[in-house]
Length: 206
Image 1 (tube, rainbow, N blue to C red):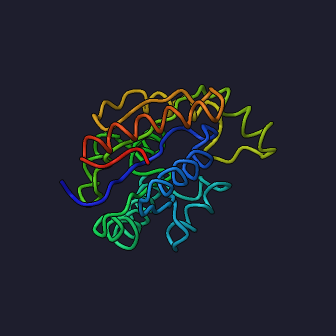
Image 2: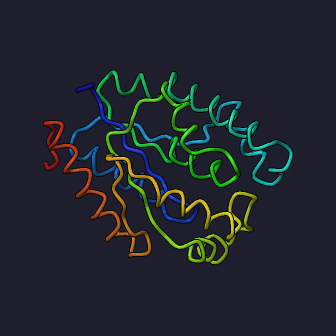
């Protein structure tokens, strides 16, 4: 087994990834682990360009958009994920290549081809796929966050994305219902992570 552990948080917008990543990170640090919390798109040049598309997605073709995500992820792997894994850290990433397969797949690219282009990216030990209806996702974004939907968050688009996430059958995926209270979702995530830690011969309690 490789050193370190890679856990990716996936799901449509509004499922609570940005809430659950630091909760798990704090729990794992309490157990004595070296934890790296990161996200995609990154703050690098390609990630910043992707964020510009949130309001102007029609500026690029689906193929061009996909290339931006691939460039951003290569840099992320080379500069953050791989070095952290090699030193034995647990990496928690808010989105990874499953999101690209789902979101760019919904935009017209072939999800299987997208997966095939990620031979450079370490496979996650665990994918925490938070599930939620597109309607509830939109309600959370608009009502709870008080935000206006960006070009990636339109309900019809999110329904397609959710359908693709539901079709993925990778063994590393654990699906967790995100409509439950935050504490219950966190408890389910901790249980799933504990199983993977034990599988790798690592401790999951203090």
